[in-house]
Length: 112
Length: 110
Image 1 (cartoon, rainbow over the protein chains, first blue to last red):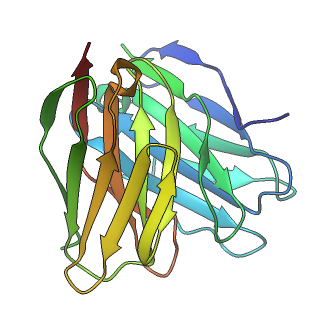
Image 2: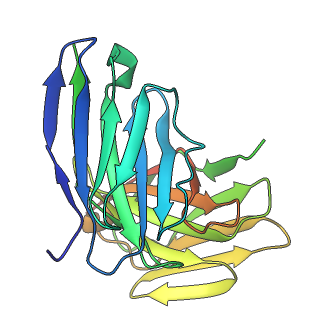
């Protein structure tokens, strides 16, 4: 597609459930980033993938969060045993490396 | 501690006014980003710069590496410029591993 695609756009889940958020980056972009936007914390970096290098996971808030990128393209962010403080908009972005960022519309996660 | 500070937090302007939003950061960076987010909307990258000045239409971004400071200017502001403007610093050798400012909410009144 022409832009960064994220799914689902909205997800409501119960505390303790696992969720998966998907990101399909712009074709040809070697770098992929996950960020989180929440009312309490603003925008924060979570993880990034660059080509075949090991991902930089330094922004993940706990070991309940993990992400993978298959085939250098689609990425999945998984949150296990969700907590209410995980409620946020999860944003994916991609870029050439180095280069301008292109953001997806985000996945809004609500944990009840 | 890596920090990015923006000012002002809120800004109201009349249509046509020249607008400046400031951003300062505390450590060496690989790139400085200016982002725009309309209410209820997605985030759009306006500029990525590591030195000097960039211009796109009515928007101008400057950066002073020595002073660790960047500014975003909007000339001839228009109500459609009303949005949150976010400064973000790329660090750790990665241009897009970002620390974000808290944003400036701009309202341009007709």
